[in-house]
Length: 266
Image (cartoon, rainbow, N blue to C red; front, side, top):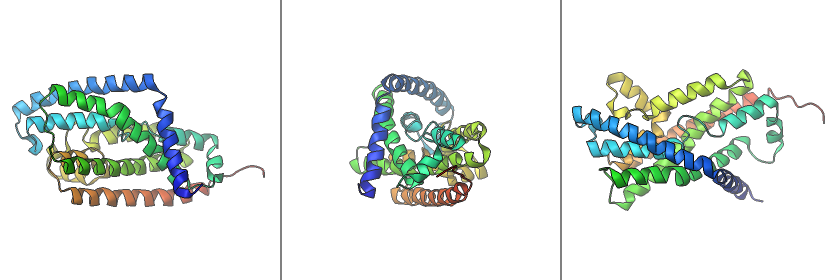
């Protein structure tokens, strides 16, 4: 099997794996919809008091909420992707088997995470977003090119998200217990991606810093492309730069970490 076909098969296998958890998917759709409703009514009250907060009108703010609920699990913004499994394999030593595979460790897990993300987008993200568009006043573009640009931003966000979580997972080579670092990942992801509030509303230096961090590629970047608040090309370059930097950092850390692996026997 060619290299490209191998990783495509890994992605397809991951998609099918997550598709088997139908009850969990249905529960996730319900949860995202409920949390979306809570956030929407909070945003409506806030935007009643502060119209045009962050440069968004009320309909755009509502759209932002439902896009966030569609991408929360898709991009594993609060964690919950492959990283827990990889950490456990490192802790038990099963990662040695992964290293013996005729495949690159980083690309193997990236392919699997892309398959997971695509399923979460279709299986868990579309319904809450559609619900929001049906029952609330939202600001959706009529230009197919804008939708296409938003999809590209989401795909780039998948790679950036993987890059962040891969570095977190590799920390298990040194920490062994990843509970603390995964909790930090969740808190940082929720806050710095804009899941609580759009990063555009953060004032001064704080706003500049959080918008420059890689987490802004996960929600803020696709949202601004969808809402017409950002140049798609500039957004893609920003996301692409972070994707390359994080993947390169992951490669370096992986190289250092695998020197710590000692396989007994044979």
